Image (cartoon, rainbow, N blue to C red; front, side, top):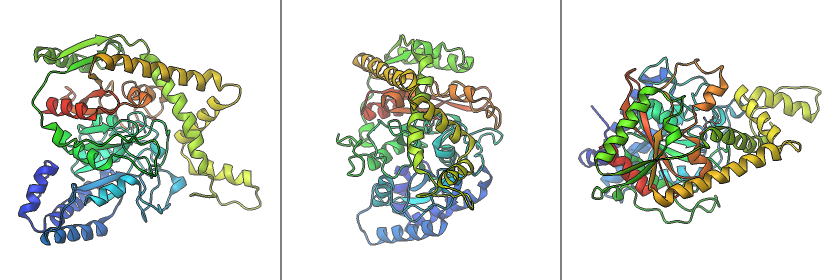
Amino acid sequence: MFSFQSINKYHSFLKENVDGCTIAVDHYLKEIEKKKHLHSFLEVFAEEAILRAKELDEKRKLGKPLGRLHGVVVGIKDVICYKGHVVSAGSKILENFKSIYNATVVEKLLQEDAIIIGRQNCDEFAMGSSNENSAYGVVRNAIDESRVPGGSSGGSAVSVQAGLTMISLGSDTGGSVRQPADFCGVVGLKPSYGRISRYGLIAYASSFDQIGIFSKTVEDAALCLEVVSGVDDFDSTVSEKPVPAYASELKIAPRKYKIAYFRQALEHPGLDPEMKATITQLINQLKLDGHTVDPIEFDLLNHIVPTYYVLTTAEASSNLSRFDAVRFGYRAPLVNSDLNDMYKASRSAGFGKEVQRRIMLGTFVLSAGYFDAYFTKAQQVRRILLNKSIEVFAQYEAIISPTVPSTAFKIGEKSDDQVAMFLADIYTVFANLVGIPAISIPLFTHSNSLPFGLQIMTNHFEETALLQLSDRLMN
Ligand code: GLN
């Protein structure tokens, strides 16, 4: 029986097993089939994965040099382009649309010998917090199938949670990796803006989007980050900072950290009282262990969700204008109509309700009469938030908080209450607004038996400290 604990242990297993990759792929294909009802995958690349596993087993037999993710079975969110494969962004408008090139992350995964086993379900164009906005149906949380897995990268989170892949890639514009990781009890890492190339990632809000990683352990996330990060000729927003050896840098002698938390975040009335008590207890324990943990004032907390939704919808309305039924995807069947009718009919039928709502909201905040009142104002708040983060990180190495104010909710419970759904992003959007790295680590279980995580944020490009502290807290 194959069982997966970490990439490192899997690599030791491969040393003993000449057919190890084939055994692993076989195992995952069976598990995916068994847990099909969770709807984590939109498509499984079964035949290809089997072939690739055989090739990799052969490569080991021949004693060739092996990639850092040799034989690692990975799933990718349905917003990441993989040449010759469908990429639909969970949307009807891109149904059957095949990518003609590889995203840079896909290139890098393949170069390091990973096996991409399938494409994973998500909220349409990564807009959502519950995976209920996918045009192809909801994803179920494997811990309690009547509950949502979180979103928008719900399929990718469930895949790691339910043991359907070793790791998976999602995208995080305002929490879409960390929030489902929290709801599913796995690690979810969103790196700094500019750490990983966005080339081949279908854009939602380009100044916020980052590809992120789901894994069982911090070490696996660190190794994957090391592989997929770094400069790229196809994305000028990627930083030229060298990529540290994140995984090996985890092995350092324990040290004391200077940690802050936003007082208003912990005292927020929307936060589940038991979660508040658990995190307060953790803070006390950290202090007893000799770390510095201080409350800091953050009176802008209630402004960050509106700021996020003004700016991201503005960017989305512009990004999604390319789906015009001429260059991409679905075109409504129409006779005797003019071009405008064709646009309208195709976009109305091709985009789901939430995407339409955001395109309209974004168009509104960018429109001539309202631009200064909404878009410019929100940009100013974004700058103030950045100043706040600079101020905090001048004194502290990390900020901790809950990842989400509640545990996973029931499917259908919040789908009619958009404001409640938006407020669930209160702790996660800060990191995207200012571009810093953030992670959710599965430290806790609620008395309702559901998991919840701790969010940790560090300064720009301080992924090493982020991963070190996370690893320390998880072990
Ligand atoms: N829930 C947030 C939203 O709907 C986050 C989405 C994301 O990170 N892609 O915008």
